[in-house]
Length: 309
Image: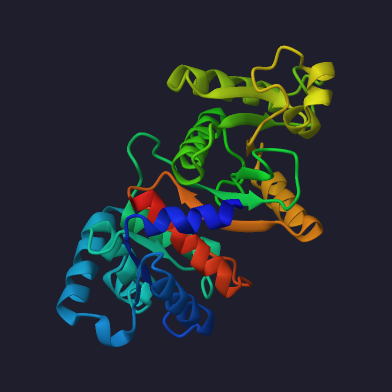
């Protein structure tokens, strides 16, 4: 059974309520039908008639109180909440729904802003980032062709602490959603000091922080991509690496590298790419590409449901 099929089966074991605020997107409507039919989750398409005016006013007031110290104008808040996305994010915040999936009609920036501000950040990390589940057909690499790529959507140039948080949250997702043992590689254009740069120093610091925070996680860096995922190359370039060229969680040094790589792998290999899946929030939420297919929405809902179980 491939990784995507396993995800759907896992979601079916304990149904969760997932809100879909993009009520006028045909792909979302069809996805909700499939999700309900297959028993993957309990989808809630947030149509305008489901917006409670009293609750909306309360959400606006709560949001305004949260951010009024930042000199935010009440009229701006009201304008934000004219979009169902913010109402859905506040529902998720207070537990009226177990998770949120949107992005078919919103940019990643819109999604990240709403989720970070409304759902809030996990105090263990204090940053939000994102990852993709990459499922490559007929691949011997990763975990039978399955990888986590992070961060590919949120933090442009993470510092060492942020990189370590990205790695930890991505590793946790790999264990919970995919039920695999995470093997984390911090990627670079050098392997173990083969090029001495500030970037390599940052990655070494990030690795040390991760090992201090989560010593049980298998991790290494800095590693070139082939050193990270090809055992024969790892034997030559980094023979003492604890992941031995079998990484399944790839941490990119910056957003440019991560975003470019996931899109290339997706298009050139026929890989399924699920996400961006937000990391570091108080409640699970998943973004979608605006070019997503119905099956992408279904599977992102399944992942979000598992994270809420």
